[in-house]
Length: 517
Image (cartoon, rainbow, N blue to C red):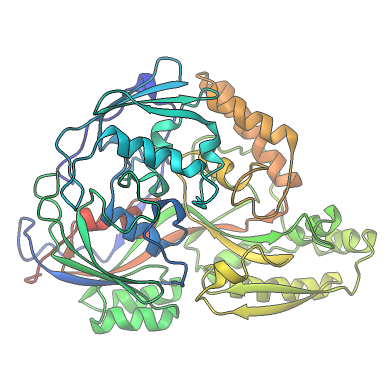
């Protein structure tokens, strides 16, 4: 990307980024054709899942399609735009704090919503504080509990006051959920400041956007129109790419990489990431809330087998802690859990669960979960547990099954910092506390780590938190999954960003079409 915004100062930014994340474009990108980006082109993107809960409201986004759609229509105060995962200024021209509690925002001038109205501090205050309204149903409402207030300071200034210090505010403000909507919109309808304008939106069917000719960043975007659809079946999604019916896909199976690379018209991009599919054991139910059951199941997870057989080694072995080995603050001293059916049987017998039959819900919507469930079913039978695998349709899986049964599979997209992954998925009051666990020591460390400027101390805290999750939480994380996307070779300007597929969901602002490639 040729144009970037100023990085936030080190004084206000502590230890962010996914250090060491690597990306590999298999087979090369193809350098023929136009030498410079040019405007024009209409493309179609196919994602792996959609549902009737698809939304234009950034606060409610929960799927890859939601994130892509919302980054096309809106902007945030900050953004993360490349593999460094360092937050940069976007709608804000400055973001400062001396104590990590009071943050001062100064907005860029002259930025306009799609309806022609100017972006002001009122829009920012409204967008931030609406997360605290239970009627909104924000997916990050618990994160915003730390916001005591957000108030206007003139037409372009905003003062944010937290209840406790938080060095990760610049990262938090870059999240898709924190994108800025127009003040007064109880139900945001796509009227943002973003690079595209909404043409058509039908939940679970399609989204169509067109280029915003008055976008506030010069020479962006390049594409004229983008259509978003879902093709839940992976084979059908790959076939659509190979046939030219679509030009971008995500969640490519490792088994399909060779098919894609055999075609001169498309390419596969593999990015090592902290994405994971996890087994969720509800701590509010039995027998899944029994500690012996949880330990038995974790001992049945053959992680190397899953990496080899399901992901063809396009994954990194995990250890039931949500920080990947190549991320900052990873704790390598947590003993690796390995397959041990003898110990698993001992835990099953001690809990009096031998022969218990338990439904296990999976779906292609949670990448790899169907095969994971089959492997767990096999090893479970050897350890005395009878898992009944229920394969559910991808369409609507997250709204009707995920977290709604004692045992389900989830899928967690990468987050740029340890604080965000812990805050959104493991804090006791988190919206996505998937297993419903509660640990006072963990919650205390989470708050303390946010406010410390001592990197060594922060690392110790995050290390202990990983150990607690590993030992106590009802979550099994077998591997971290590399991101595999497929692209038409005529689509240029794409870079790998470890936050998610489609260039961290923000490709629309940077991609361009080269018909001659």
